[in-house]
Length: 283
Image (cartoon, rainbow, N blue to C red):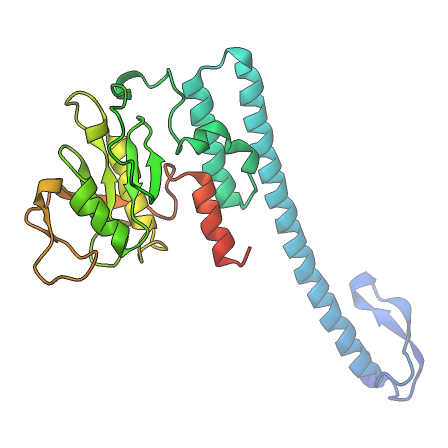
C-alpha cells in the first residue's frame, strides 16, 4: 500500500518492494477496467479481511464439531463398557443425559425415543425401586379424550386441550387424592396427577409432581419461559363460580407452588418437545 502513490492510475503492472519480506521486489498486475491500482488494492485487502474472518468462523465450527464428536464417542464408550449387563437405571440415566445434551447441541435423536419415551419418559418397568407405586386401579377416565401421560412412577397425568376438557378434568374427573395443577398468572391447560388410580395412600413422588408441573407450564402461554410458577391444589378446593365461563375455576385453598420448566424439562417426552420445535419452525 505504501508504494501505490508511485504507480500511475493507468498502469497494468508494477514492481514494488515488499517490506514484510525484507524489501524483496514483487511484481503486481492490475486488471483492466476494474479501477485504478489503488482501488484494486483496496478491494484485495477487503477480500483478505473477509477471508481471515471466515477462516476464524470455520476454525470455530471445526472446534465445535470436534467437541460434539468427543461427546458422541464418550457416550458410545460408556454404552460399550456397560455391555449387556448394564442396569436399566444406568441406561435410562444415559439416555436422559444424551437427550438433554443433544438438545443443546441441536442433534436429532429420534432413535432414542423408544419405548421409554412412549411411556412418557418413565423409568423401565421392574426397576422403579422406591418410587414404584402399587398397580393402577381400574381406569376412572373412560370418557377422557384429552392428553394423557405417564409419570416416572407410572401415575397417569391428564392434560386438558381446551376449555371444555379443562372443565371436565377439574370438576368431573378430579377426585381425592389427585393433585390439580395450573400455571400461575397466565392462561393454560388444567393438569391432573391421578393419584386416585394408585392403590394405597403413598404421597406422590417428587418426580411425578415435577413432571405434572412441567407439563402445566409447557401447555400454557408460559411455554417459552425457562421457569414458570405452577399452582397445585386438592380437587376438593377447585370450584366453579356462578356465572363463570366454560373452563374457569376458582381455588378455595392452594396447596402451594412448584417451579415448572417447560423449555429444558427432562421429564416431558422428547417427541412432545420435538413437535413443538417442528411447529415453531414450520416443520
